[in-house]
Each structure stands twice: as structure tokens, then as C-alpha cells.
Amino acid sequence: MKLILSLMLLTYSFSSFSSVLIGLVDIQKIITSIKEGKNVQKTLEKNFNDKKTLLKKDEEAIKKAQENYKKQSMVLAEAARATKEREIQEMMMKLQNKTMEFQREIQKMEQDMKKPILEKLRPIIDEVSKASAVTMTFELSAAPIVYAESKKDLSDEVIKAYDKKHPGK
Image (cartoon, rainbow, N blue to C red; front, side, top):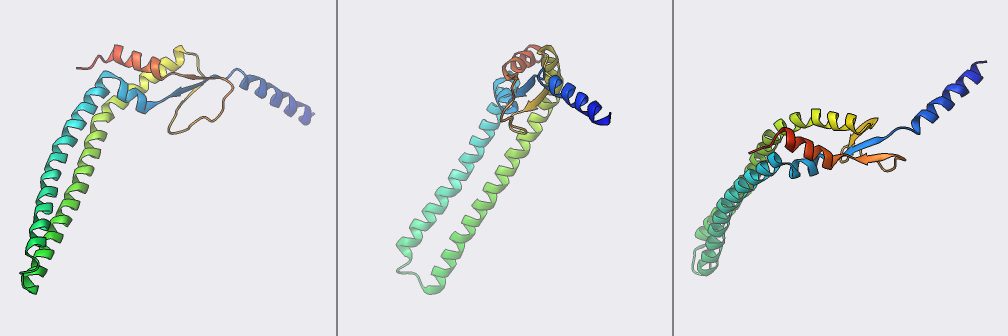
């Protein structure tokens, strides 16, 4: 009797899976496509370019110091050469540290700027998922669905709904 009951439940659960519609969203695509996300991207790019300019100046200073060292190395005393080499090495270390610091700053800035968008995005994904009658919605990068008999990409619909609800600046 238990075997028959188990088989009936198993058959019922398999038949109910056939009507499952999987929703998919590409959060990265959504963020880079919505108006607010584009504004964030512009701000990040400007900040990145400003920092890149500063780093380029430091790189040029190092290059100039290396060229000067090459020109003078033959006439410099051993102690002076060692001092110049150490100075150039210190300049390179400072540049490397500054580069890593800038990368951390930009990553934190990106997180801080995208966090409010993600918070506003979740209820919109819920609304679009319900309106599209999907059973479950997955974020593509977090849980890529290799195969689903019935799936629907909701990304474009979420972009439209977000921009309609949050027009941006």
C-alpha cells in the first residue's frame, strides 16, 4: 500500500514539474542598461579616469628617473648608483601601492553606488516574475540554468519596469 501511495505521489510530482516555468534575470545586464545604472557607470568611469591620470603621471616620473639613471650610471659612484636604484624601486613600490588602493576605492565606490539599485531591483524582479507567471526566478551568473524545458529571460522586462518606476536622473 505504501509503495502504491509513493508511486502515485511521485507521478503527481513529476507531472507538476512539467508546468514549471523558470524565470532568468541577468543582473549585470540590467544594471548596465537601466538609467540609474548608466549614471553609476559614468561616475565610476570618470573616477577611474581621474585616478588613471594620476597614475600615469607617477609612471612618467618613474620612466624619467630610469632614463636619467641610465644616462648617469656610468659616471656615478657605486654608492650613488645604489641610492638611485633604491629611489626608483621605492617609486615603483609606491605606484604599485597607490594602484591597489585606487582599485579598492573604485570597487567600494561601485558596491556603495549599486547597493541601493539592487535593493530597489528585488521587488521589481518579484513583480515581473509574478506577472510573467514564472514559478522560480534565477540570476544567471549566480545559478546558471544549463537546461530547463520551460524558461523565460525576464531581464528586458525588468529593465523596462525599473526605468518606469525609477526614472533616474
